[in-house]
Amino acid sequence: MSAELPLLSVQDLVIEFDTRQGRRRVVDQVSFDLAPGEVLGILGESGSGKTMTTMAVLGLVAGEPGVMGGSIKLLDGEQQVDLLSDLDGVLSRKGDRVVKNGRKWRRTVHKRMQPLWGRMMTAVFQNPRHSLDPLMTVGAQVEESIELALPDLAADAVAAKAVDWLDRVQMNQPQRVHGSYPHELSGGMCQRAMIAVALARRPKLLIADEPTTGLDTTVRAEIVELFRALLEEERRSMMYISHDIREVLYLADRVIVMKGGKVVETETADNLRLGRGTRADYTAMLLSAADLPTGAAA
Picture 1 (cartoon, rainbow, N blue to C red):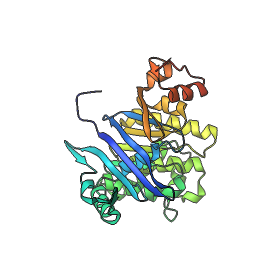
Picture 2 (cartoon, rainbow, N blue to C red):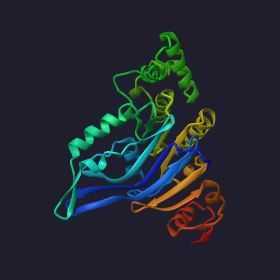
Picture 3 (tube, rainbow, N blue to C red):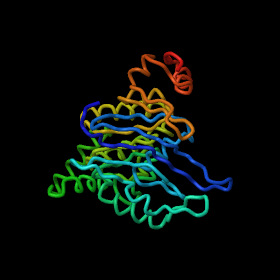
């Protein structure tokens, strides 16, 4: 890690939801930094809090009360923008309970995040058909991202760049795919298209949340390899969220392991892969299940 400011700094993040059984804390004092150009893997089982953490970074946590504490700072140029700076202003105490003005908070978050979505950060989710517009061709959606990143580019150059992006994500017959609609593509092709849409916007941070879930084994391997090739080429920062430890260790520079809403371990991918150092019990269990060296017990 260099002495420069992190691209993303999450400190003491708390997310809670009200349920029939009472208030439940799903993210509990989570902290981590992400350096420019770094790939951070977030590993954990379903319900570990990994997706909720990343949705908070994107400003997309739904439900009440949602984000209840902590800070999320994003480096925009030379300035750190605190995405949760107004949180205290919408919290109040009702008896022995902290409540939040959800409507005011949603307006605040949307106003702050609107200029950051796409330009500073974007996401690839596990079901690309939910993210791609079914009424627009794939090419038109890639072109929309290019136009936002390069507004002065001529229309014919935008179209050519869109085809080039589809070629870079290893689409067969990119010219044909350019004119196709999402429903005409396979799940793997839709995921490649979504990666092209996301990266063509040239964000500083790409968040990939379980991007291979639901794909068959061969396509999963191809998508992971595609991420690796594009990251080496583009040098983008990425958060890669998965329950698949082999995918995470293959792509990430550093890994945080989550369980029960908490970070139980932070380690370099190399140390985890080679079994160096001491391991938290849960991390050791994940490594053992994947036939990887577990290192020494903590």
